[in-house]
Length: 126
Image 1: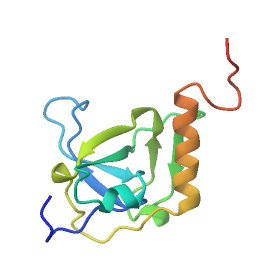
Image 2 (image 1 turned 60 degrees about the vertical axis):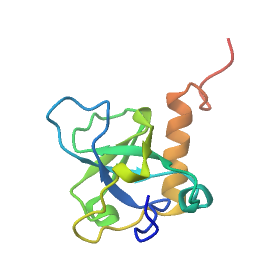
Image 3 (image 1 turned 180 degrees about the vertical axis):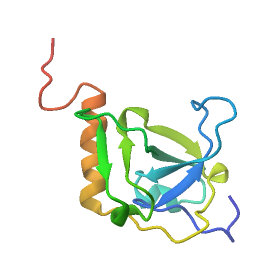
């Protein structure tokens, strides 16, 4: 990543083509969830992201619903089960200013990631 480009920061929404997306699908919005110490580090060329989608299913414990006023996008949800590592160089800044998610919301996403990993409060060791 060149020094002239601003680093992606925790809670920001950027766009990226995810390797897991079907062929022909364009870039999608993602929330940066890795810590800023890593995000800003010049030798760290990747960040941790969670994709947003407008395709929602009710009562999915790994989905965090976001209102348009919270993101600057249409109503969407974070799919915590699809947490990914992406290269900073593959990220595209939004064409218009979007809102940043709060620390509280990013921590809510982290709890949903824990649920996706079977580490939530409803899971006991076998």
